[in-house]
Length: 336
Image (cartoon, rainbow, N blue to C red; front, side, top):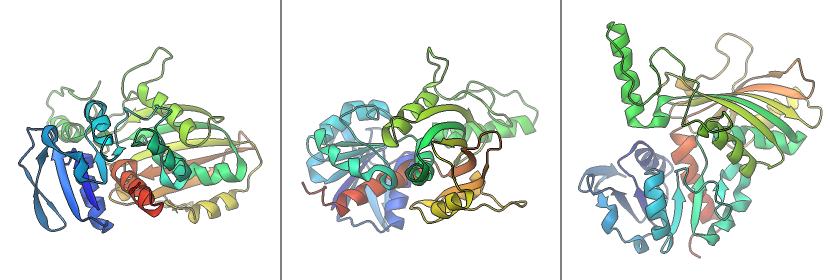
């Protein structure tokens, strides 16, 4: 089939290219699309050079599926235009709360995918929400989740290339005893942790924390109670989540480990010894959602603690989008 990648020159766009290549996705022709300032750039894909095309001039009737990886402003303006001629899989936050647009993580709620026909748009979930629901869906099926308390530790690549560049430059400045000036973060990010992602809301939460609340409910179960704190940390790639999960039923810890070890997208690395767990560095460039430190919450008999780590540019964005497309193909939706 023919595909388009809108935002092909950005971090997620390039990861989409990488994932499509690794998965040997069935492509007849790919169109790499970006803003006019990036038009004409050369990007290699499947060993061939491709010219980046101008979004303003692109004809979406050429493709069966269009991946959007260019942010909310571009999605707001151009995704509905593209959706008149093709199926749109959007990585931005813009459409996630729309009740007529499915918010999809294939391992969790692929049955909702057919609802894309409402507007011909499918939303990709938040990069910290995806690993949470991948890890918790099998447990919700087993024991019925009552409440989730999540603390997310999110890498600077969640801000984009500018965030990565700033962490590197600030680290150099601190080591050289120079003054640090923050541009993309509210405080110094090098050698620090910032409990603030996105803007504050009237309820005291940040938009990132509210996204966790709203999206987990939409994807997993609206009856689940959720609270979270989202922290930006000086890590280049991969988001981590410390999750405390309270069930409606008594659970068996070994059963949790066994079920997670065979669940799609999950990989359990959980040894009670030095290094017997996964950290962000080890999760980078991996397709799996890793679960470690699975243990009883000794203060609550129906609660369990766990540590979840995932590459936010892969499963948190590009990989999940490609898996949505694969599910479309598997269910023969793309041709309808």
